[in-house]
Length: 141
Image 1 (cartoon, one colour):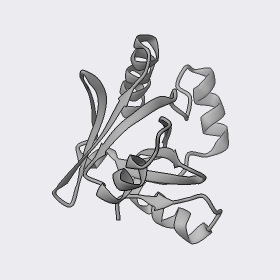
Image 2 (cartoon, helix red, strand yellow):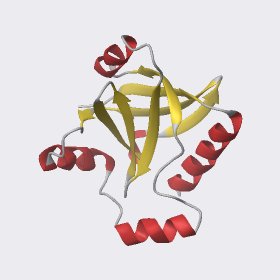
Image 3 (spheres, rainbow, N blue to C red):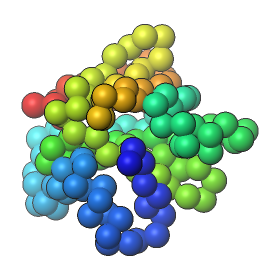
Image 4 (cartoon, rainbow, N blue to C red):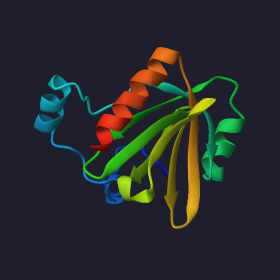
């Protein structure tokens, strides 16, 4: 599966998300790294399009308002969170899935799971995009 509805605090669903994206970072590690300049969470961006996850894109297409996305670092990758109406969806991804961030007009996070490419297209102000790219590159290390 590519995305999960995590609106309701179901521990089994979170286990599935963390099994794909890596374990949650310990709270003390997140605090320490935030003071060192690498927060656990990314800056928020506007999600324009989701390629490769048709079910999530179909939910978004009926919306007239913009949808935000932000990312959370895990032990093995990232989890993207986006809200569609009142539901929150998580898209876990790990570094071993060829996870990259490029700037091609829009800011795009790419990964590939089981041979299927996925791309999250995002936009923000130039400064927010620059902060996200810096956050992404530091998270990769």
